[in-house]
Length: 274
Ligand code: 7PM
Image (tube, rainbow, N blue to C red):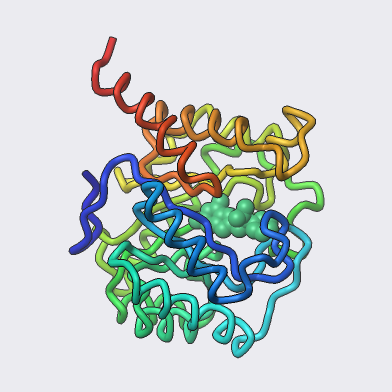
């Protein structure tokens, strides 16, 4: 089990991805309609998702940000409707303090911030809201981050960043028990960097905090398999299993049913030892 403040979820847990961005690379804008999004969320809960991640700002490499009002308009109706049908944890994928506050008021129970609370006012908002927070590593900004990312040692540099962000959160009054860390696969990393991170996940459990991994359908899996985004489910499931074998706590995934089954197998082997 994983304890995040007053929330208890299984280990490993699956976070199902519900994008409400019309330009999302995996969903092609299919979930902008709140009714469609709600159906998808209900399916993911039935399939065994422990968290539903709702994001209205496309963080795709090369993407420019969306305005605050636009992001609020996209996510709030979906958070409210998902909350009305399930008690499952809802995380809001945002970097904006105003969206964090409004989302939690609408029923979100966790903040998932690819900018690790580095935006102005974000640390204070998270500390005040007192909900679990995922701090993700990103090198650069979404618009420019894939322009020749460079590291001497990607694993130690990502770990050092996460350590520094945990320290900043604790200094701002956020309870350390609420913090989850994430190496940020694909965010300012080459394919080789992403594979190195996956191979060395245990070194990223900074301060023993739970580790979230989001590799589902990402381009490194395309590079390894030659598959287009919509055909990357088997590769995504393989990556999820490797992550769980390397002690990941939360798996962020598009294909919830397949991921839940696969990680049950991995978890049984971990619990048996050998
Ligand atoms: C287009 C391209 C749309 C890429 C969305 C994406 C992560 C995340 C994302 C992650 C955490 C995606 C990404 N990735 N949050 N949000 N960790 N914590 O593939 O790896 O969903 S956005």
